[in-house]
Image (cartoon, rainbow, N blue to C red):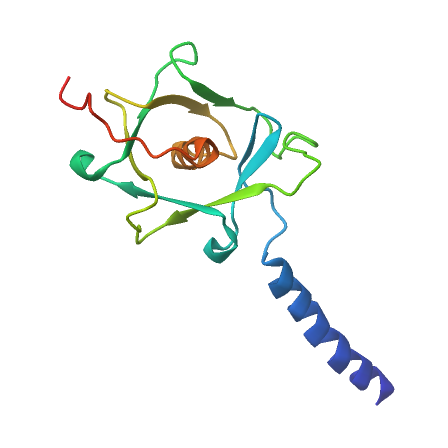
Length: 155
């Protein structure tokens, strides 16, 4: 009976700890470091300080991100050839700034149009086992914290 009581008191505490931390898996999430600040994709959207969303309509975009064919032509490059995240790759003395990808954008958050065509505010090159082009675009736009209005869209 004592074992059952102990188990009954420990299980709710473990569940509460998982929810308090906001993580359901311990796997690494995409993360970059910009100017000494870590920026990471949030496990849960309510945790994030910044939100971005994506659109397939270029006229609705506030930021355009082009997927580049070469690392030399990109503003932001992610290349890895490992199965797990490198230890300390995104370590910082402070908590990472969290970015969430929203499905319902608000007018105040950046809306990203991700394509292989220009013009673009950012050009990215991604060859990674842990990052998608979408993750990289969300992180770079979230890290910059700037909402661009594209004036050169007709060029």
